[in-house]
Image (cartoon, rainbow, N blue to C red; front, top):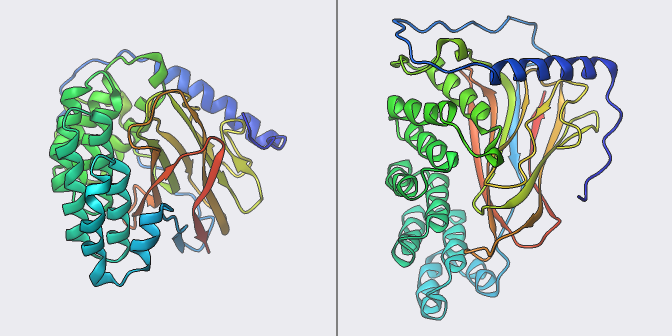
Length: 354
């Protein structure tokens, strides 16, 4: 795998890694059982002194589709984009990538309703393809239309209940749509169900999302094992997912020290942690940092390769970048982009901490 050699971890980081490994083993050993609990009992995080001035900002990298028709549409005046799309549609009627590109440009121009109209073609052209429907759901989320994404993800779940991502995608869409209890129940399915080994690690990410949701809303938690209830606020959190099965994507985060967190360097000296490497399935991979030191954190996505034919002509990446995760000032940014070439690396965005 093409990846930069990790720097030698400092002694404190090695000790933290051993401690975190022990915690993970202990968590995996818990047998989940249902129990009745009347009230939520979340252990608050220790009130450590902040490592920064509390100002965190997300700057996203500019990614644009580069097909010929995309360049023509981008060069057109905003009022002409949809008319040009209609002119090109017959020639590209069977190309899901075409509709994704056009929707990207319309969203970029602030024409959200037209973008959603264009995206609706994906559902009509491949009703039985859950991979295409999953991409449609991601794009509807990016267009801030979770009420439309929820039924799409329900359809994906009906087609692929054996994949934990189907429950997680639905849970996150339900949360964005304000259906908090249903969102928690869907995320809990990811936590408690047994999954194929290639999905190992997703339960811990879903558990983090479940606990953060439960800490911010009064919900019925009787189905959630009380031993797993602990919200963990973070300064920075990045989650990378993708739409093609049997594909290998890598999340890279470089901190102000110049140290890169990735699959070969999962615990940084500053305390950043990268989740386990997903080399099959749909991810996700997660980077988390509880206390961010001042400076710029660079977020990149690397496409290592895919072992299946891609139904949309490329692999679609979905990234969620969050500051103050689990806190009152939580802010999220969503990025969706497509990568075609193996070993392609793109700059997704940056966190600036002051």
